[in-house]
Length: 78
Image (cartoon, rainbow, N blue to C red; front, side, top):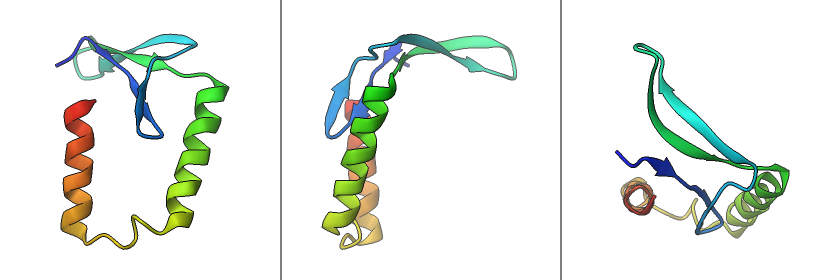
């Protein structure tokens, strides 16, 4: 597992402007990784990107298997 995870916003990996946050395994209270902690500007950017994607209809035109391939591809770059 990666030691540090970036945010994926509007087709790009974005470093957290605010700082970092620990991702913990709650069952053993062990740190798994650090994640980018975004600020309000990143949240607004992500919201606008999501709205553009929704309004374009591009995702709703995908077959479920194509959607799955897209999500898997995002997972490989993050």
